[in-house]
Image (cartoon, rainbow, N blue to C red; front, side):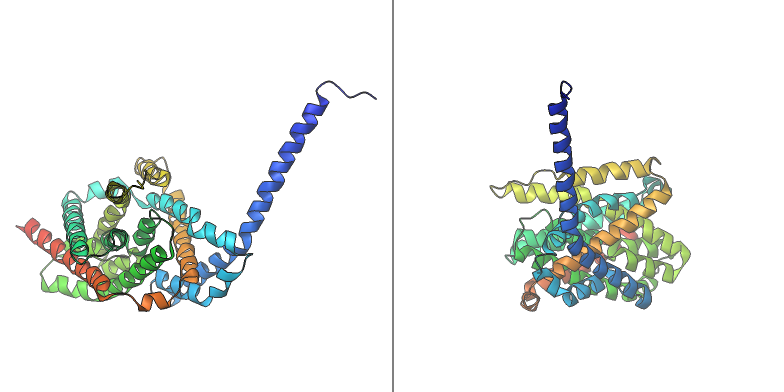
Length: 347
């Protein structure tokens, strides 16, 4: 029986579609072993955080250390690379779902002034100190944004803009580990200092939100004082998170201006800003925004776990005192500036 006109072309098109489908399925299957290991580490970190109350990012690092053998398994390599690369970028995008400008407006200009002055002033001093101590610009920005914005999440987001090297990952993990320790100490000490300084509940919340690095620890410290302080702390912290994209753009411009390899505007930052605007206008329902925030958190913990798997931990032991000094100094400067701004707002 003769073939209908166009049948060979139709068969060729169908074969091409099948080939593409098989190729994509194979690609997804290649990612599964590594993604499974990263997801297991993130789930373990989340569980330990819920049970002990400790920072999930720290437990994700510990999980990565325990699962280091997976980093040397060729079957896991594609999924691990995806988790520390593309998945990390998607997690940054979904972080924008946490931001609602309506909540910020409800608190007036106070949180905006405190965050704006302390972030810009603290970051400028930290970058200047890093330059004075002759630290690499890449480390200076990773450390600066880790302290100024949102701890480990900002540190890994900043590191993702730099060329992929073992030193980049070492710096990111060093900053994440340091800010986690500093933030844990701040969660205990800062509420006590706020009492000594005579701040009311709202001012205390703004101080905590503007100075403690990790969101979970901001929540713990704020609501440990009172519900009013907790609400103010969360809103103030979310303003810092909202400034992640502009800060990363500034980093890309600053580093690119001083090197031949310019860093373009990463598409995921534009997506972050777009999702923030959609959330603020109510086009993204709060329930979906909550789910996005949870997925973002899981993605960050998977990325941290994978980077910890691949890291030569002996490199962390070789951390220079000047690197740790910049992180500690920036944390202190951030607190002092925020305190001074709040004191001025009282007058």
